[in-house]
Length: 306
Length: 306
Image 1: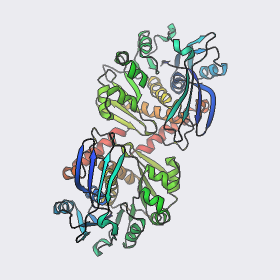
Image 2: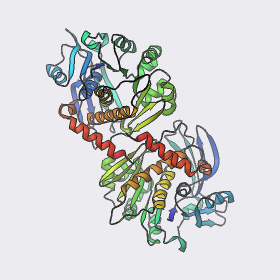
Image 3: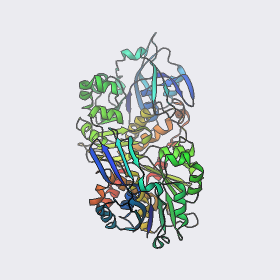
């Protein structure tokens, strides 16, 4: 069933030990939508300038992604980010952030989006995330991502926003910052008091942990032989996670949810994040097939069973 | 079936964010033996001074541990190590290392040890590890640990030593150093060419990976609510791993081994490592029961199944 994805569509300049690309398609909403599109129809809400290339529009349109909500600002330039990764790719340094048209992004949902049952709010200003949610009716499952900047400087706004979410997807350092607890289990317990019934803490190469009040589920990180470019891996995880759940039509009923399906969604998230790292930018998604996704899911199972 | 454990028996001074202990029982062989003793009879080979306290001898003797191979040097002092942990306990600094009687440790096996079928060589000089193995007859499964110092400065001796082992248990930074490969999967492939048919790479709080030529198994790290003292966790992992295999009487036959049992052994290793961190030094093992071990093993299963 339909999934609305809100966030940045951008161009990225990236340097990793494997090479350097000056300008390529990027942005959180791009990765989320491309990954989720393997599982369910996606409706994107984002803004670009008139420098946004037709081939990039074509790629998205060819992947189960509705672009009715992709605003195009005449005379504007698309959000640009550039960064460089450390030798082991565990750290990255931002070299440039040109918000461009993204600075005035005010997401307005086309009428055709408003009754979609699933919503993934990429990392944008919390008040904007909240306004998007308010434009929707008939939501079955809504949640999203955030980042250090909003946690530090927009805490009250962020707390009011996530209080309305079913799930929150963040990384371990963000979880620590949000909860003021170093220990992940304690951090998760505090965050589950903030509203969401489901929390996924992403740990990069070390996998992810799904937390719910009744217990947790640990997914290991997929062991890749080569990591070419980790850009977008976390967003691809989010896309795989919510895309799978939307594709299954899962919905909470009086606070209950099928936890076995949530566990599978975490593994599909890990699968999509792992594929994302195998080539630069979104390139792996140009050729990736649903059969390869299923094969890697099975590999996760065979590598973790005991 | 009987397991011979060789390594240091020591006193440790440890400071963690939870407190400071000036002198307590420690040493690799101590942790390995205490953990393995829950699964199988253990025969320890180590050296102490005449300052080694009767209550520490009594603790070991009470735990399925044969002390016929514990040499006591009259007038000598027991190996002493002191260290301090960082706030998040992911780094530690050595404050003091007094080798004392350990400097001249020359492990000689009592006749009653030589036909034991299982051998775990704790982290000591590679030539000494090799001499211990040569004193045994009828080994079914032998392997051990090493460290950066031997990898860097005694490489040829170390390679000749591990070439005779069935399994090697090391941490991720040691695996990278030994293989000259940063990527764990490539590192493991190279190490499996060095002799051992089984490699376990320990990743601290992030779990462990079992590598064999036909594939790998990923065990997540147990999420503790409180880590009081990580000292000895890796050795407790080793003790749980080999202790379980020895207890099951597992043996390779023409290079084949029951991989399902190896996977279970990795989980028992993780279980013992996690318990070790819950109190200072060996204290958790003073009260830990086999029932608690089984309950945590089941918890690992329920937290990882999908």
